[in-house]
Length: 163
Image (tube, rainbow, N blue to C red; front, side, top):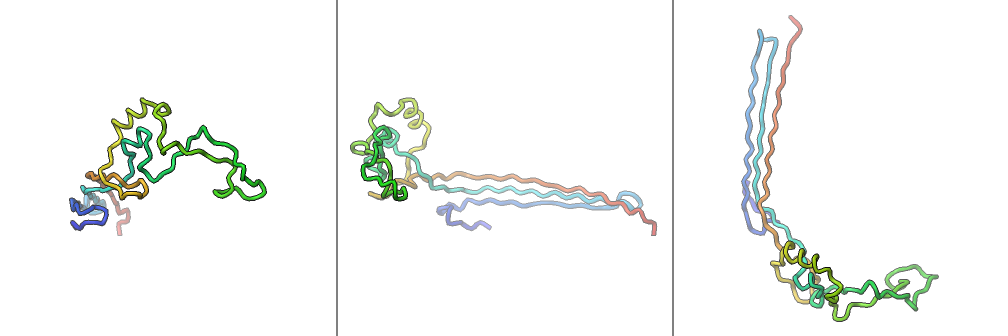
């Protein structure tokens, strides 16, 4: 069946081959029999995945275009409005954090080796985001997926009764 799935994004590359053979016969005076079979599967299809990858600006510390707030971990201070008699939660947290100015991490706080590694090896976004939307699902990866499966059975039966 060469039908497209929803996840294939219109790419209908699907090749599936199932095949096999079986054979059985008597071996010795119709008291001993054997049976053997083989089954094979070859499957090749397109596999589409929608993923989230950082933009080059985010790798360099600039989150000003994303819908994510980046806080400075070194600027956590005690929350003067914290009430220890109430349950801790988003409205009653013991610490407050300070956002990076402009939502940009200073370049001296980013490891240059890691930045170079990410810029070289992490794929760049290939799908555009809606303005103001959450920074996600910006990379479509379509690749061929192949499966090879082989199995077989051998059986020998002997009838010991002479009646």
